[in-house]
Length: 105
Image (cartoon, rainbow, N blue to C red; front, side, top):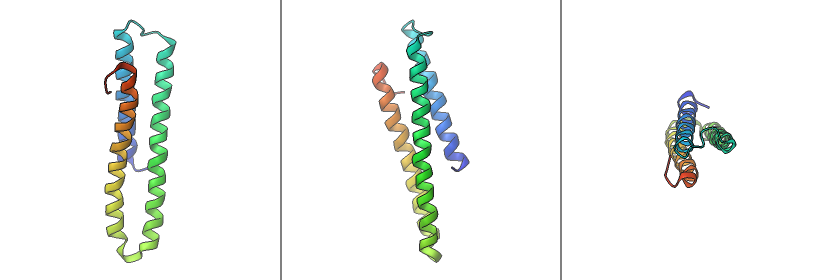
């Protein structure tokens, strides 16, 4: 996975964890066992994002091989699609986490 995409997922995970911890602390449940479940859930969501992005990367490599000379155009389009995919994955994960506290992370 390219470093910028990896970093974006890691940044999302850290922010989501901080948001969850803050919500639990506000509810007086900072030491709750439920918080560990939510933090693990965020880690799993992050790994799922990485897996989807990696699959996209594999598709990009195959597309580049198949398109030959015109691969540059295909690569640029696919890179833009990957950015949109990453943004969509983060939005979906934020919405899923938002259901916990009634707000988006």
